[in-house]
Image 1 (tube, rainbow, N blue to C red):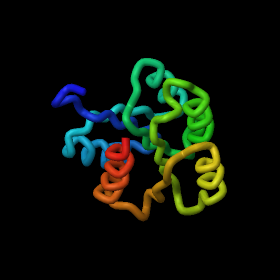
Image 2 (tube, rainbow, N blue to C red):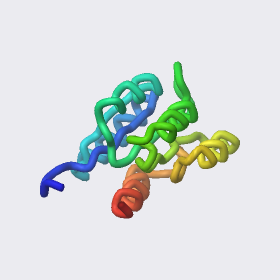
Image 3 (cartoon, rainbow, N blue to C red):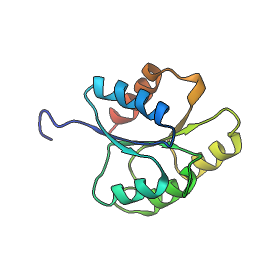
Image 4 (cartoon, rainbow, N blue to C red):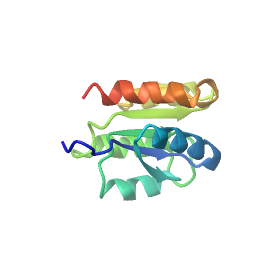
Length: 128
């Protein structure tokens, strides 16, 4: 791996406010951020890039996070990329389903600061 090659984090999130917070924090930490505002866009971008980790919102228009997760896990090239689900407090069933589909972890958006999100990301990237 090249010395200064940045780790790529894909954020799939339809809330631009949440996206901006995570993007700013990750870029400060020298990650390359790939953004997708919905599942359809995420799948399209994943055809050409392999991020080191995906932050995936569950509730999105067009294709929800669980659909995206299924597609990622069915793809030989993508299936080993760690996926952290971004959820709201009320989504316990979806989280359980997502973990069952192969997500590595989840974050409840209202409970985690950007720094805590970063710690979780680093945990999964440094395990490789």
